[in-house]
Image (cartoon, rainbow, N blue to C red; front, side, top):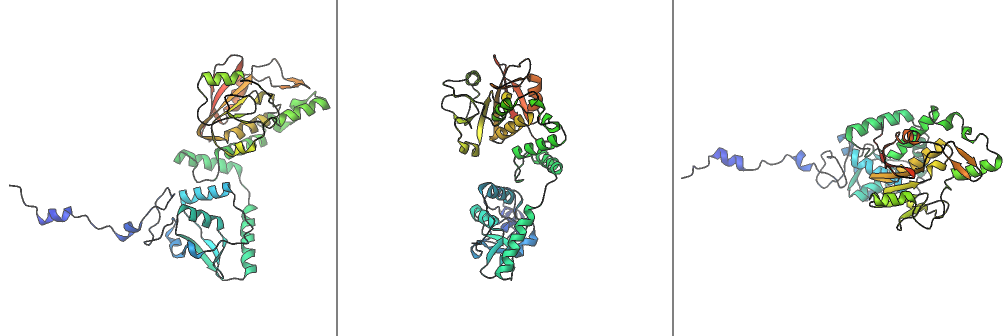
Length: 363
């Protein structure tokens, strides 16, 4: 006969009631971290309990119809990522007359989209002139600030090492890579920094005009079929997912960006699994132009995307003529350039130099 449960055991079976603090703790929609404990019915994420007393219902706050500060998609995406990662860390500023938001309109818009019910805000008694002046001064003073480029790079690298990504920073890997490239140029690490015209020595006026045209990425030709690199990528099954051809060549109806023949700039607003670039880098006469092209393509990639790059086989020397420019770099020179921002894998192609370039973590 089973033993009867003792009162002590019966009590243990009962679920202990949750404390009010735990009961009130919730995760707001789109938020990657726990919020500060908030009253029932309040959905928000604030970085400090000190902001709890400033919470105002979103429905009571009015977007400023005269707001001079615009918020494009990139700006709103950055605000959204910051709120989701770190929470609201400073209050909006609201004019009591009409409860109009004078500072924090973008934050309010994103909070509504995230499904929050409240944001922290301070309410100020002031007339329209003072309220508008405050908004203009706040937005403009922040805009006038500068950046210590090396500090940004060091801090971003430390954060990426610690958390494994750059989530919430509002700095993309491509922007950080471009910042690093500017630092390198300022330090004289790029050949164009010391003398931007060095590679153009010996060119006449007509030849310089041709090279300047090439430097504007007018490097492709009107192809009726696939180039050798494109055929090689296809055979190796490297063209997976969403693929963009950047610069030259046609293949199987892939999306194609080409300023000279097909300037569809809308393609540069999307993210791609693979970006191909064939016979373009080797006709750009200055190193910083090759860097800018690489960083542009890097910025188009999805998180696990990669570049497929092809260059002509090494020439005996730089070719400079009205018909065009041909860089004499070999494998070592190209891979030294790629190594700043990518892990480079040689493709072992015949007739051209080819690489699969996977973006590496910065820092």
